[in-house]
Length: 327
Image 1 (tube, rainbow, N blue to C red):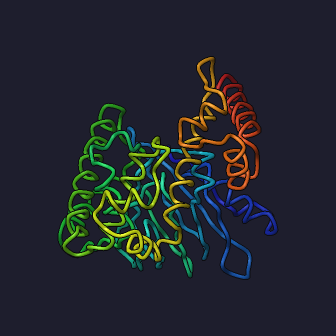
Image 2: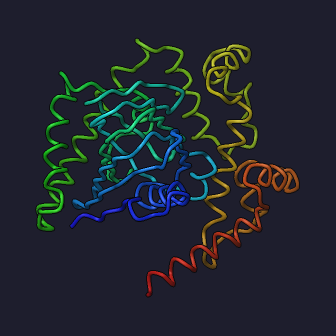
């Protein structure tokens, strides 16, 4: 049975706050802002099909964005395919911007920042699966995001009718059938990622491909305290100057990227609970921060709290989740 959420009975002055909470709870935590001047209207219907979540959204003009801070605080690893049923959107992820029209598909990863800007009323369907269910490598997934995928021909023409039919019958399948159907969706998503990553490969996007290689190298070597722009440039056979030029369109410098990714991993590790949870200084040293004082200042600048306060907040949230689950 579908879980329905609507702003119909919510006072006008409270609707955006209500919608923000509903979107963050149903999909992933995001920032939400309305674009229109009148009373906001929105509704969502959500169904589960095995490991797949299907959500239909109809709402007024708005902008939604998943920021690095929200990712660090709630690192839910999902891969989603959105179907633009009506209206348009501007979609941004991994440094690429796509204009999404009616009938188009978009693919995105909730562990990296993204945003959707809807200039008018729209309807969209969102199909989410756990990242761990997919076999696609991170490098291929990163190449496949940030694009509008047409459905007039190619693999999009195969995927769209399947997803449309599945959404219309999502709440009617017995568990065994639902599990098999979600497995089919996972295979289709893997195929989509493979197809899109090939079309966006180095032959068609040399600079973008190199940026993705550098980002992947950063992710693989965060534990190296000597990781720096000079080493990155040498590893990829380019000059430091050219490396910085590559990142001019990324909205972040190379040094800031390294520090940001390290802070994100520190945030995740500090949120761990139990006897084996490492100390703050051990986490800092593990992720390449030589000076505990520098780590504390950088962490506070990024997240507004000290590492110790972050750990306490995480423990409080986890305890609240356990109490809620027990109830």
